[in-house]
Length: 401
Ligand SMILES: Cc1cc2nc3c(=O)[nH]c(=O)nc-3n(C[C@H](O)[C@H](O)[C@H](O)COP(=O)(O)OP(=O)(O)OC[C@H]3O[C@@H](n4cnc5c(N)ncnc54)[C@H](O)[C@@H]3O)c2cc1C
Image (tube, rainbow, N blue to C red; front, top):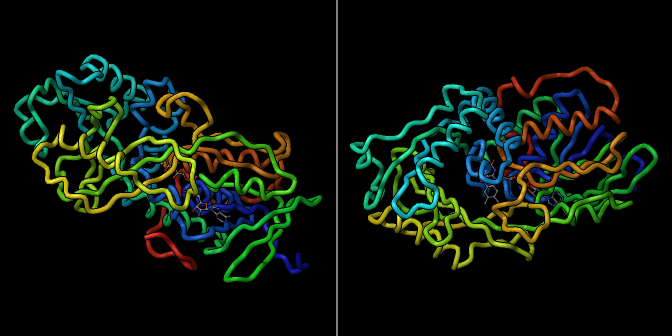
């Protein structure tokens, strides 16, 4: 590689929410930080999520209390620093005669959720009086026994990625996009990194390298010499449908009649967004598409809860969760982010496995805390917990629609 390589304290590979979150945190910490994204910011999973900034009520069932607590704290922070991008929305949980989760269980879950959210006003929930049932966007009332209402956050995931990227740029972070990470080689002081941009090869040098490539994480890991430690993972696809129609009263959190999994119905850009499924995936992450049976499963759930909705399919798309490998169903697997370092005492490379959109800022802070063991002490520029996220276009780069 050539001797005129640009130098950084750290380089992040991947321009999804985790990558831009680390770039912002590192730039705020005062380091010279850069990010390389192959296609467009948020072109991977980070534009194909359910777009919720939430604690994850359903993770209480798999006892992931620490994750729920941290996510609720992050929700609180994001509501403060990004009020134009993250809003509290009413969520409705209807309970029918046939619903597996009974009213006492839902009430208990919501009480625990409120407790883990420090009993702040946003954590309050209520059981709706029967007279309000007919106002709920045509929700089926046959066999309906109770409707609970609580609040959680909704965002535009791709717009959130853009806002965090812009904040990182304002703090001095550099973004190369589209540009592909080709390989990296360990040297005494860090890594020599080869990029491909507009058909040309270029070189960067960095003291630390962060792998934030979501579903591509292990492919990118193999391109680092020596190959750093990693985790065995499964990719689990989640499909969403965009349907004709409107939901005026908020989000509906239902149980799919077929298997009891959680399915959300959400207002989204003058459409109804329905998701999601959990289907094991083994192909190329770039070409993940909804399967006909997944579309059928979500449409069947729609007819069960909103029998008069037109259900006209306007669009559908799928994203990939990165979960620790296991024979267990996706539902029971841990959803926390796992950070894997080459060296716990002096990390030079860190891989970010899994995690939630909601927790991107906390993950960025954890990566920075690990890197303090390796990178120089510098003057901090900002605190991402209080720094408002900007709106408006990015300076340099291509972004997903
Ligand atoms: C169906 C579904 C619903 C979800 N819903 C929610 C939700 O409602 N709330 C929530 O909090 N979380 C949710 N999540 C989780 C959340 O969406 C993900 O955790 C998050 O988007 C992952 O972001 P990431 O940055 O790790 O990966 P990605 O967004 O996939 O980004 C990885 C990036 O790396 C780039 N890349 C790959 N290889 C290279 C290379 N060689 N060179 C340069 N760049 C490269 C890719 O182009 C891509 O842009 C959901 C996930 C799924 C799948």
